[in-house]
Image (cartoon, rainbow, N blue to C red; front, side, top):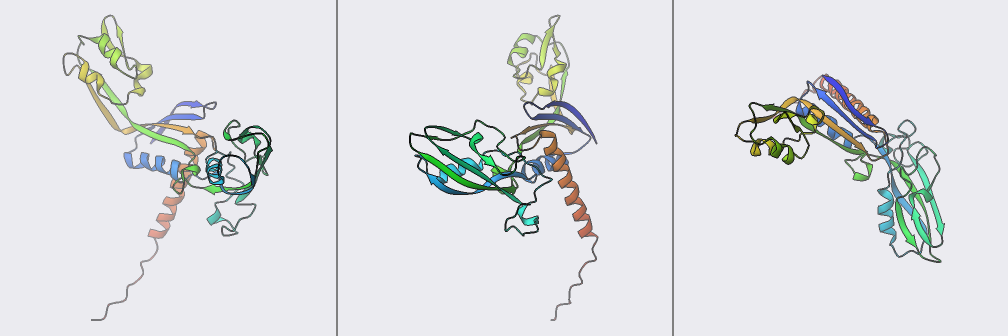
Amino acid sequence: MKIELLKLDKKQNKLSFILRNANHAFANAIRRNAIEEVPVMAIEDVEFRNNSSVIYDEIIAHRLGLIPLTTDLKSYNLPDKCKCNGKGCAQCQLKLILKVLGQGVVYSSDITSTDPKVKPTYQKIPIVKLLKGQKLEFEATANLGKGKDHTKWSPGLVYYKDMPIININKQCKNPEVVVEQCPQNVFEVKNNNLVLNKDNLLNCHLCNACVDICEPKGTITLDKNDKDFIFYVESWGQLESKEIIIEALKIIKDTSDEFIKEIKKKPVKEKASKK
């Protein structure tokens, strides 16, 4: 198994890499653990002190829950794994406060956190618009959670595709048409011949448009490599894209170790049933 990094965009918080010599089961395990098991912070409870806006408390609370919060996994525990048994303490939750009076839009930047490491990732997320004399005041509680329980705890979008295998077997009679119809610019024309654009080869998503339109039929063959996978990771901002994959792999390892430990235990002898 080998990892080949394709692109790491820290500004957009995106990551792409190739997973080589693996299989669909392991690739999908990475994907599912990344979006369902990697914990991040999100607002769970909101206590409204004052809300004279035109939007109901429940709707504002829903909006608050979907605001991504920067997450410090080293400082907080999941509620069910905390020493307080989920009752709530400084090691598993924190408070966020907002108090705005006056006309204008209330943004996520108006939220004040008791922990500077945990705050809204994006500062210009609109929460509500207040008219003259209206007020919004609340105290929210945030805690770690998993995407399998609610999408607000999902760290980002993770997906993969099979590595494409494209062959041009003979000269294409309509190369310009193929280049125009390919949605990913995988082909180009050189010396009146259809050739592969190697810079865009990995962008192919196996749509078969080239196979169907190229003349004569059979000029282009399109297949997939079921041992190599192209991964794409787009973080919502709570964690860095690379950190999402690292945490997902840790979870897979810990789960596997626990499974091995359980499977090695001596079987419990069942009592013989009396007839």
